[in-house]
Image 1 (cartoon, each protein chain N blue to C red):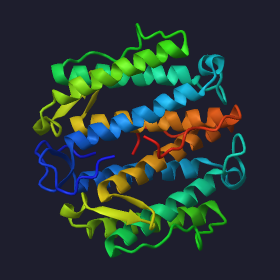
Image 2: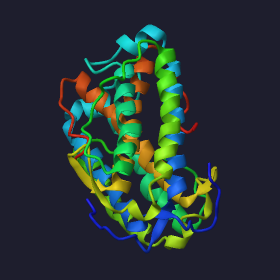
Image 3: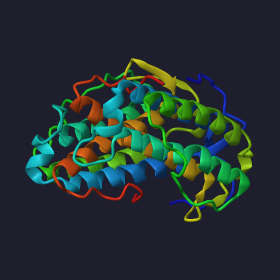
Length: 163
Length: 163
């Protein structure tokens, strides 16, 4: 892991580019949520893993809350409390609200802060840009699992390159 | 998709940081390959999907060949030809060789070129930094599927945050 605290001289990816990259992935994850039948979204999984609704709740408990903690430099612990959608429509509504939350808080991180180390959730001390890449990676990882669930249900998942 | 061709003034991720990010993911994918039993690596899958060896062959057909094409600005089409490991040891050997290939060719891309549009495999015209993020995303996506295969086999996958 890199722990540099200075802006890199060889920078190749910008702040707005990273946000668009993330929101593009979130748009695809939204399509995966939509692709699940109502019941299977909350109940189906493979190999005893969590259903896709639980994976989406994890993602909702990271993105917005983590960015808010970064902006406030708050050691707020990770929590899924209060994120309890009971229907696909409720989950999608939370998803869309978090899209705005992410845009808002991301915009409030000065670009020179992205290489600063922040102890996310009081336990993950990494440069802010790495924390955010981790949110995206974690989303792709769980969504890839959702693709297997959809295949196991005989449902064609959305194209991976659609954002 | 962004199509800017100028270096961003708000850059937050450097060239070496992106390479370390990618190679960190490749190290984790290597551990996932290792976690499969020999036979299941080549034969097991869930829901009629490709076995994990085939997913790894796809990744090997992208990373090194794509970077070489970027450096040479060559419209080489995507191909899995000639990448035919028959054992886990052979696959890991190809994986490790590609680690060096990636380091080598990545290093030869001038940092100011990452925002230039390149028509990868003669069909994906995006800025080079987006092409490379796509390689990483695609790897995380397929590896997430490999995690489901391992769970279905009753095998504990490596920790996602180990790189």
